[in-house]
Picture (cartoon, rainbow over the protein chains, first blue to last red):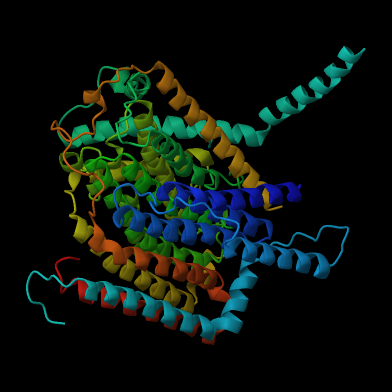
Length: 174
Length: 344
Length: 120
């Protein structure tokens, strides 16, 4: 049963990612990206990381996709179509070969290195309390540094926007 | 002979279908506290709101459809179903329909985790609270898509305002609940209700309650935060270009969210199904939920609207700071050794 | 098994989906039909449509979205930490308080900026 769900979720992730790349309208592409990320959250849940799946939805689909949508909607030309994409990928382009090579390498690694087990591995649900305790115990200082990094990112973002606006109504001091 | 062999398989299927349909879970999903409860509560809330606003404004409100106008929501429902679903030129009708559908599904989703009794919850998730947050975080993007897809100035501006408003008040709402999580050590909504057996969380977490209540008002786009829907400015905000059944679905989604948010406030801060045993537990939840709804509706009739930049600044700066202060207060509470009161 | 709750959520969502789709379909089929250009024009309080609808409206609030992403991630760590807060030894509880205190800095900075420009 989990295998069927896994296959279905993987199909959703890949199909919506392909749709996101190939969509004519950028907005539809972003919606495809959102669906793909929700599929990834489903895969997290299959691996037993419920909490991570929920925050994957909240952070990626709820925040990052919103950011992308907002940017597309407000910073673009009239129609939102990519005008210069008339030429389809030819067989001489490097991208296809690189992608095929990477796919072969990953497939080979999985086939050769993965242990052969006739029984599906046990489903282990990560206990959130254990996660919290180990985060606090082993990674407490790292989390504080992470807080500093995120704080710096926010301050940097605010400063960047501040500099962008050259036209000030009255002369304000820096 | 082959025809007789088909029948046993059909009989099995019918049997299992009957078993599913009459199973307690399915009944819970469809009747109470699921679909029927949501639909009836939404209808009742629209009537309640119109009556209370009318009384606040010294009028009477719906009067003719049934006793005291109770059947008015039904009349509106039937009327909207038969109205034309105008598909505006330049608008992306498929996107609008899809997003209206998605809005209704998102708005109703958290009801599965809200406990209506000691063992009366559709899906008892260990991360119930985070599930609610994840679902709520998907709203701004859907509203933005509806606003953009309508391709009308009122809709787009309303959608943008909705986006920024809900995004701004999302974080204070989450952080104001962190105090409760710290005191009970669980994210399970049923456990949180059970932890309030001695004292409801509205008392030790009064700051968190204030922040959550205010942020919920902003999430619901209700006055004093109803700028996206300011009727004198933006007609209906992101709902301007929806009409007929699509408008009904959008309207229902808004009131479903109202109901779910009130039920959430009841569960988190007002003790959920706890109360003297003369009244059965689910009735307690319904009563408290509608009490919260009445307060929210009365606030709508009483307060003026907040300007958009003040709105965003209040959400980001002041409410966030208050939520952080609430966290510090909770830490002090735990250090004073009072944490045992709410430990399950 | 935890996956059980999620299938219930899926079933509930399916029920809501069926209900809403049938409402929309009913409205589409039974609703009045009158396609003419006046009815289909976007609503602009009576005037004919003038200019583009999708302009750069609230661009100056863009930093709020950036802050949302950052604080969303922080909320994830705060909840993980806060869940086990009462059971932690004192040193780690202090770390939590320091984490919360660090968050105040970008907030203070944003408040500081917002007071000095009237575009915020």
